[in-house]
Image (tube, rainbow over all chains, first blue to last red; front, side, top):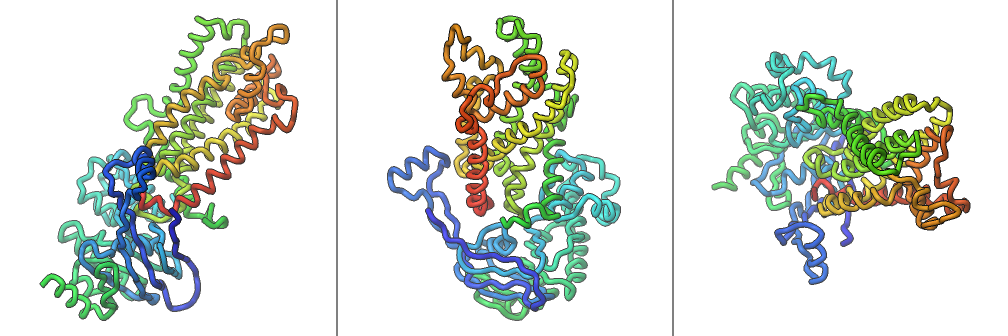
Length: 257
Length: 277
């Protein structure tokens, strides 16, 4: 049952590499039995059945990202992009290999982490803010800006369950963009909302470009071409192309032809 | 988990906000709201008091039995709430674990802190009860602090240990529920330890009485009772009842062992919580 564990280190130096990934591997154990629990575990043990099968999601990932670079990661559904991002973020442990992160890293795996439908909009702002590392005092200072930007000020004392999903996303986005870290990890979270919201996202990306190290996972080749300095194509848990946005976008589009 | 980071700024903010949210949510959508933190144990006390002081003769001769009983039920509720909320915290907060990276012990500690807040509110009630009961305040009341701290350490240790197993095998929660019911009777919450031991003239089960007092929960509860009641009436504690100091230290050793083992197991397993939960 002993599982190997790779290395993930957070350091703070003046080198120009923000993230370096070497020989990263990650696999999951997918249970093959339908029922979970102690009973099944004991049966499996007695029968000598493993009760799970290994699914190799990331096979051998190597890349480096320089400080200030805006890098896109693309790939089909199930190619391992999200697992890669979660492993970079420290949510999953690397199984083998090494990840070195230089600087503070802010992951947006999803907007509105911790949002609770039973709490008011106001309470959720403080709660979600805490997830992003903001103290109450810091939120106090940006409180009005958050609501003005989300254009939801009159709903701030309503419970979140009375918000439409679009309103929730706008509020979450309005908090998220205030997060300050050396490296931002964005997972497609911004691919929702109406045209006006999309425009706000585009403006946000544009404001990040050149000022901030960003890793963006997306299916939008338009975003890749418009904002990225570089892009990485992942297929089947491996980096198959690490090149200019234009080349990667073309290769990605060719996957579906 | 490296030690210098355990209480860094971000973790403190998270812990505070999660605890606040837990406490708020528990009494959402109820008319009496936070009052329930007081009412629930008081109602349990009222029932037990009626049965064991009015109907059955357990507390009849002792004018301080209400305080004795209230301390027992309050601390017992604290222990059960702490452990069951704590061990379920990882599963309940699974959503969070899968989306942000943070030390996982924070969700367990925040769940137990809610129980601590409830217990502290009830401690105020105990003080009021004691005053009404005619017990004069004294410095010995301060002895409750180490005893409560010890009980919290034990609860936290159990929450860490069983919580890390509960992620994979949810049976743990059900097993614990049953176990706790049995444990209730093995601790002098309603009865007094002297009823088990009998008198010197007519000993009934003095050995069992000693064994019961080696349970750290019983030891803590008796110590808290001692702190409040000893000035006006006798309270048997582990320390007064068991004369061999090497034996009477056993409860404290159990607490330390559970806490250390729990923390180590949790630390080892917590790396995989995000993918297993």
